[in-house]
Length: 211
Length: 211
DNA sequence: TAAATATTTAACTATGTGGTTAAACCTATT
DNA sequence: AATAGGTTTAACCACATAGTTAAATATTTA
Image (tube, rainbow over all chains, first blue to last red; front, side, top):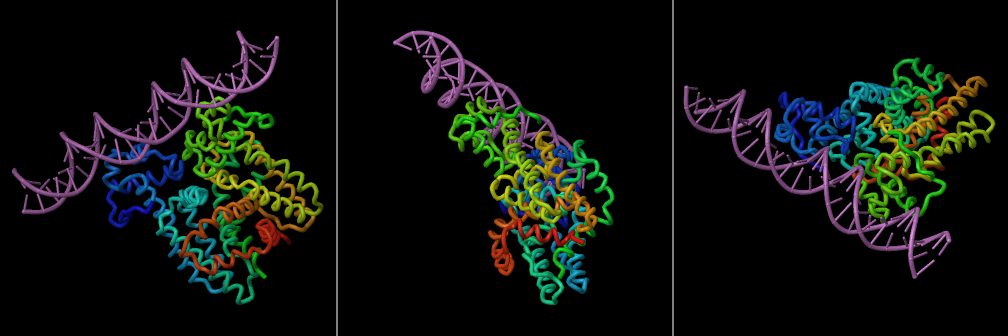
């Protein structure tokens, strides 16, 4: 599953159109549900051109997933570094992820399907990026524990809680709102999210682990 | 996408084998990634027999998803009813879900892919089941708020937090443990989950929303 | 401008996949 | 045992889909 990466810096117009179309299509239908013909059609290019510019379906997917998931790591590290206390660092961490998800609406479905599939087509580059994000979280939690502001927690469960809250809320809301038989109270209540999703998740998680 | 439901009560051996194989295969590869031939092969029956007993791929999937997601609703309501205080009810709620996931390892991947796909092939029966689960949670949170033990929260975000924590932790752990470049500290720490996953999630969520 | 190179295209191929069919094979009833 | 109804099966079909090819068309280089 490890395929060549297209140099994203020097992408021509055609390749850009293809990758954008691929990102949307993979996000919508998943790897197996996506047809190369549809990507070509959405991009407005001939299928052979797609193969010429990027490569086969696997390569296409590897590039998309790298583009979507790969570039978050360093951003997080920077955002966290700017904060002082463990509380502020954790808040910065969560806000950055929530913001990345906002700016990158294809990320939630792709990540969720990837997790659901056991990371079967995760290229190593991306897995390493994720690992580095986890390492940042681990550092924050340890510092908080040492300084006596956080309880002893299971780091990966905190990760699951943060990512899960954000991903499921993002993806679940449209489904919920489409269903008529959902109690009105629930819909009404969720409309008035106090602040951003990131703010709210940060509040809850901080309250959950603070001493 | 709404298809006939096979009467699960009076299932013969063949149909059972087929549905079991289908459940595993759909969980592993998702709807589009699953091939009817593989289900038949895993079940040890001829493909035509599969069509004779259950129906086409859509019907097969609808039955699987109903079997996996549908029967939780009433169980939750009962478990919650047995508890007295809102805190105990919420704990019972979370423990029941964690337990259901444990007993039903196909549930996490199927649910996650369903959410990722925007609930595109969710049969109405199942969607209604999920709605009733949400209604139970809403009741608990409102009671807690009225009695002054819970803060004012966004119910669907609490739902996302509970489900997200459980699903992502369950599905993410094997991926994480397979990756060599994950910090050893993280792996070691997670080995000693104090109590069950449900216990830990319940503790965190309760602490997050308690006044 | 002309040759060489890069890029795009329509048409094609091979294979995979969902679904069907008609015959063979059980199983129970008379 | 003979018959009828239910069940399974091998073989088959139509279509979809990933990937290729060789020619046509831009683009760059000399």
